[in-house]
Length: 257
Image (cartoon, rainbow, N blue to C red):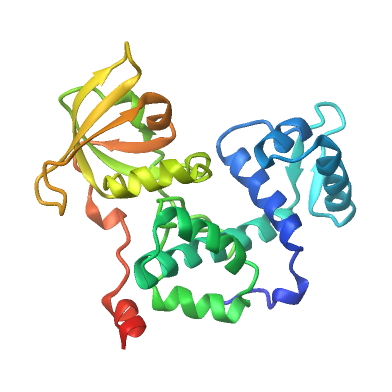
């Protein structure tokens, strides 16, 4: 896989990369990105955001709409954000499926690793993992300026009682909640897993799912809040399992050998 030759020395700083990636997430969720919302999402002060935005604009990574004050990634900014996300996603695969960390811990560790890998090392990890099209949570990994075509899916909260659903992805918004990530992993609510919707209790804001036959947690039931379920995407029915990546056995053998 070829890249433009950029390496770790020419990447945005760790803080700048986090801003670019967060703006990319928010655009992907259809949210208009203004400084106040970005500050809220990042948990920093408006003054801190203003300072960083000024810097990113000066470096040609970000643009500000003169009328709406919305923040938009430039082509260079989008490329930098996508490169960071690719490293983050591959780090998560490595940490969860090869090393054996939990989702929440792996997400935290990946924030450090995503700034440590060169493009050459990133490509080697990608090859070892079998070129996953998504992160472990089902969000597409851009490559060479292109994002893999994936079904959009529907919010899990929209599922009807009595139906079967296949978990498609855990949105970036949900990924930011470590407790939710841990809950989902412990209950097998992950991309590719099929559930029967046992009950949707709108009056108390919950839904109950039962793991479909054939899985390691066959028959396991889990109750999830509708607010959290709205942050997950599902496909109706039993989806084609070729949509969902499985890390090759050689990667696990490499870790134990």
